Image (tube, rainbow over all chains, first blue to last red; front, top):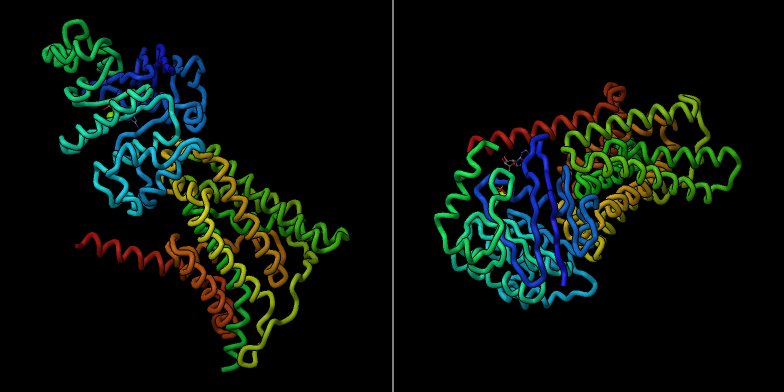
Length: 237
Length: 289
Ligand SMILES: Nc1ncnc2c1ncn2[C@@H]1O[C@H](COP(=O)(O)OP(=O)(O)O)[C@@H](O)[C@H]1O
Ligand SMILES: [Mg+2]
């Protein structure tokens, strides 16, 4: 059982606060969904968690081990995997070579193909030639082969056909069921809320909702209000 | 005719050195994304360790090994500066930093080695290897060209057949994605700097007896090396190799023609200019389409 605990995290970009005092938890077996409009600070939050950008304040811990000062590589070796926005495959490498880059000594390429059998016949194809959906599968599979405890996924559904998004969501749900703690960032809420457990909504760098996915899914009005700014947070941040 | 051939062949040692330095520059650029102006200076530092030990009376081959070790260490040190403090910088910033480092290395090198004071550089490989149409081809030229070919073949094998090579290609493609997967980015980068440092040092040791062994002259061999790399558009090892050898031959030919021989050191510059103008032309053509 693993647990990612983020407390009071703040992150600046170009000297301006972009993420402010965020608390967030992700547990083995569960999906924490992070929603929010474009520019809310979701990507910045994940980049701070994985170490791409430094954090200004607060702490990040996996099973009590604090990571906020470690380099990205060290955080990866502590069990944090980050699937970045924009399908960052190694373009010049084949599908299989992409998987070999991250291969943990205790992991097996077969696990990746078991999760996404679609990739088997694309094994020797350069990653730049894969379809968007295949590239997304590849980066998720690649992260999986580092044997992470916590998986951060940024906007995996962007620009993909609904049938593929459903396919990816099912796979991510399965990973959580197998014991991973997942943080799933999405701009489009419905599907993410249907597979998630706990939901966070961000606006202007702050968490404005922290609660059940199911509850939020039932109230479209509430979700709209949270995205666009309602009464309690109408004061400009 | 024979005179022309003689001067062309005389340019081969230089050509081989330009080729090897150029291939190392391409290797560095492709893997750690730095246009490295310190390449030749790193090799020069190692070469002067050899000269110092040799002048102090140490036996030659242990001194060569010590020199290569020193060149490797210098490469790793420069690489450490580049990865530690300029890892996230833009390509042009990184290139500018290596120019600054080159100036620093030359200043320190001239100070330590006594400026223009002539040194006694041992000729590691004297004599000729074989005769080509009646012209002597020196062992030094065969060796530098052979080393350049060897480096090209080995680096291709290394990149395509080993796990470390695979990680290096991943690193070259997307450094951050590689680091996020736990690839030891810093260590791998330093490996690249160390490997190129070792090879350039050996190449410079071979060519040094033919040039005035002065820290600045040798360090500035980076100019024809980058010209060769440019011929390979900083991508193709084999074009860089051919370009370097061709540069050496053209230089050799030029030195035999009285009216142009005083300008022969401008040849790499003219080549750089021509290649850049050519690539600009293509870019404009692309835009026009
Ligand atoms: N590299 C950057 N430099 C400065 N500001 C940035 C940078 N990247 C993003 N921002 C700003 O940070 C805010 C949050 O961006 P981001 O984290 O990408 O949001 P989201 O992923 O929720 O769409 C935006 O206002 C954006 O303009
Ligand atoms: Mg984003």
